[in-house]
Amino acid sequence: MKPQYRYIYFGLALVLFILFVISFWDYSIDDAFITFRYAEHFADGHGMVFNVGDEPVEGYSNFLWLLLLAALYKLGLPTYLCAKLFGVLLTALAGGIWFWHYRHDESPWAWLAGTLYLVAPITAFWAVSGLELGLYSCALAGGLTAFRRRSYWSLPWLAIMVLSRPEGFVIGFVMIIVAVAVEYFRGEWHSRYVLANALTLVFATALIMIFRLVVFGYIFPNTYYAKSGGVEYGFATLLEMLTYFLPLSGLFLAGIVVVIRDRLHDKTLTLAVSLFVVQAIISSLVDPVMNFNFRYLAPFLPLFILVGALVVSRYNTRLLKAVLVVAGLSLLTPYAAVTATIANEKTVMSAQEDLIAWIDGLPPDAVISITDIGRIPYYTDKRYHDIWGLVSEDIGQHGFNPLDEYFRFPDYFVLVGHFDDRGHITLRFGRERLISKCRGFNTTYRYAGISTPPGADIHKFGYYYIRLKKDQQAVDSLMTNHPPTRIRN
Image (cartoon, rainbow, N blue to C red):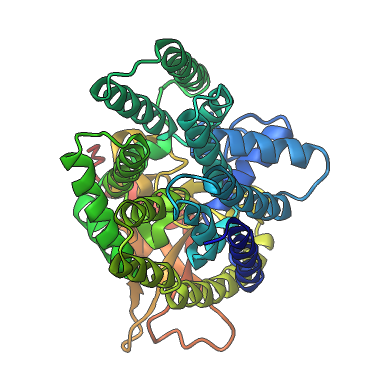
């Protein structure tokens, strides 16, 4: 293929990416609003807190992204819009970095890494989500491409990677270890350059851990503790996503075989395989939702594509070229899943808007326990208890205990569920069901309404918000006559 055609194809990919962005623009993941609330509280001088006046708890997992949003908010810019715009711009920049680095590479198909990355609908889906994925994608693209050509520009990119995501330091150190192993087998050694990168990673990692220790009292984010578990389901979700890209997954497996057979001889291929596999394992071990639509694997999608492109470039047969074409088309297959997710999210947002309007009418000092702590708390100025534990140190550090959550005795519980045919409340999440089964709960908390999308049938399965109000007299009677035993896991 003539080199100039590569620019044309990349331009077309960029246009398709923009069209996807426009199509998905209304989507924003609920988790992003947690960071928005932290960023605005920090910018307003309240510290790293979710609720104003609380002790600091690291309920976010994107330190540098939070600082960027806080700075923009301090300048008077809207947090929500800035998060989406910067997410899109940084994601496009990441695709451009991958393409520019490989546009004249000796491997004739390596340039597809950045091009097909922008073609994939999940790339645009996460670009508009409000999360730090665009920033993390840039850091990975800039760091790895600079590292490959032994440029010292890798140093700031690696620091950004560490400060953008909690697992960033793991990815950085794996990159260095793999590079050292490859150079050892090839009889090469660039000690000064490798040492500079290693020291940068150590310094950035030490910096963020010292910050956590001083501000929060522990070296890992609270989200690390709160999201642990669900390993089997996490890997199952990952495999489900990989089936969307079945031809590309086959090329990736072939890449693993080549790496093992050649004893790490190909540095680029070995790095791409290693970093993608490590991130896939991390995502699956931490929480199943981390693999939802390739969530934190989205920045690593260029590596997934690159492995397939390098395998095809190595053997360059007609059959493999055909497989690569099919693999590229397979990147479009999650489009239906993405649009279904967005449609479902719009329905949930509709219920959330109804709930937000109701919460705005509550007294200023009202305290609410809730599972969805993103969009709802961000748009309402109230104090919240987080049933999921992301911004609750008690749950994150010590585990969930339904009786402890009941014993907080908030003014309101807002639980997700619907009514069954007999008029009984059916709750969606296990943690909420456990709380509702605590002795005395049905007398101390009374039904106060339900928030749904317009025209929803509350007797059919749906994502509705059931509002329960505390009866203080019932609470006083319970604690005086039949106090429940308090248990700590």
